[in-house]
Image 1 (cartoon, helix red, strand yellow):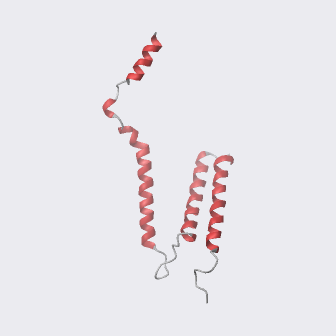
Image 2 (cartoon, rainbow, N blue to C red):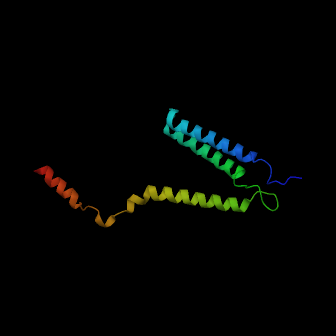
Image 3 (cartoon, one colour):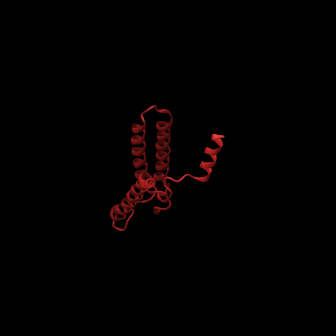
Length: 121
């Protein structure tokens, strides 16, 4: 009787093929589709979610646990961390410039002053 480690990894092959196909679709959508920017972003995010799900199921063995159920608590924790990192990054990128270098506001750099001086001559 063969154990589970000796059979051919068909799920890995299928997962890899699906990942390649989804990546090529996303590449086509981004570079050649002609869709609006908002539509492109929505499609790519949707494809990314599908690809992440495929990779979790096919490669990360999410279904393998002691009781045979999905590892729900682990997945919820990982989703929370992912959302926190993405939301924090968007927040910093959106609002970080508002508070950057407030001590030197209104002051010109010495390089800018020299350029203005050269232009006036």
